[in-house]
Every structure is written in structure tokens, then in C-alpha cells.
Length: 83
Image 1 (cartoon, helix red, strand yellow):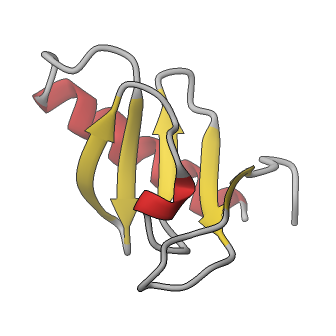
Image 2 (cartoon, rainbow, N blue to C red; image 1 turned 60 degrees about the vertical axis):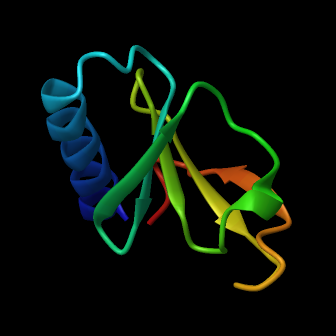
């Protein structure tokens, strides 16, 4: 899990460096690619399950439940200490 956290944070930081017009907010990633940004977490149904969101402080959230057609059911904070 630690490698996943580090990789998500590094990818988010790199994207933020190249897109400084987007202050704060959440960087959205699917399968290691950044595909979007939002100013705050919104309705998880607008994202597919498995999407990660990384905020400016490095907190990570994962869209879970639901399906690709109807979207996710909830955002869950990823525990950086989980194994």
C-alpha cells in the first residue's frame, strides 16, 4: 500500500507542477493517469469505482461501490498506514 500511496502522490504533484492554474482541489486518476481536477470531492456517482483523488495536502480518496455505468457509491479515505 505504501508504494501505491507514494506513486499517487508523486503523480499528483507532477501534474500540479505543470498545471499551476488549478489551485488546491483534487487531482483525479484512473489507472495511473490523471484525467481531471475538481475543486472539492463531489457526488461519487460522477466517477467510476476505483478512481483515486489526491488533494493538495496529499490526502487520498478512492471511489468505491457501484459500477462503471451508474458510478461509484462513496468516497473512502485511503489509510496511508494500511498494509
